[in-house]
Length: 212
Image (cartoon, rainbow, N blue to C red; front, side, top):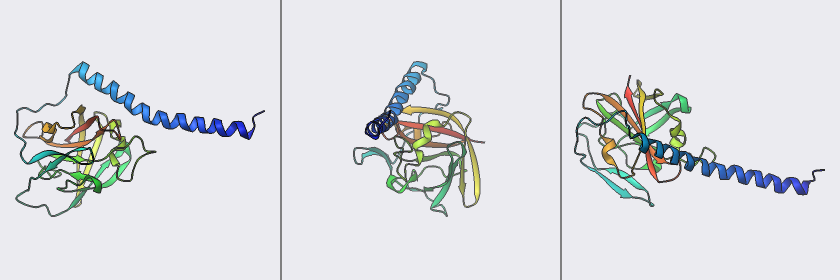
């Protein structure tokens, strides 16, 4: 006969195992993905030429190496935010702050990067989390690792919508700023960046999309 004195410890044990798995699984997933990327040594899209990245530096904020851009555009956009929608991840109309270095405010668009619809690379950064259970309100990119090639990304700026399709996902060093550049000088791209494994700071996950 199961008594309350047995149920309570068993419940705590099950909860503890569940929470532990929420921490361990992202790390295991990271190791598998990182090993696979190194083993295959393949990227679907690579820059066609080396480009000098001006005005971008790496600054440590609370032991977090962040991309900081001092770039200023000649013609300021007539909007301060645009929205991001990723149907597969059930992310809908999340606001992105234009030309911002402040990750604490939510999703940010790197100052000087291309704007939605423009040629180049719309570069967006956001926080992740160990899982949705531990997710903070501004950890919008907690589920970003679930995106795969072919998934769609939508952005809307002042009522105009632009659709992109994921063409590549990869892990990079936190100080690798080369991903700010578009793969070529003709296409219209979007890049989403967050920490990986989710909530930790080993690498950066890059999701690259091309306008369709």
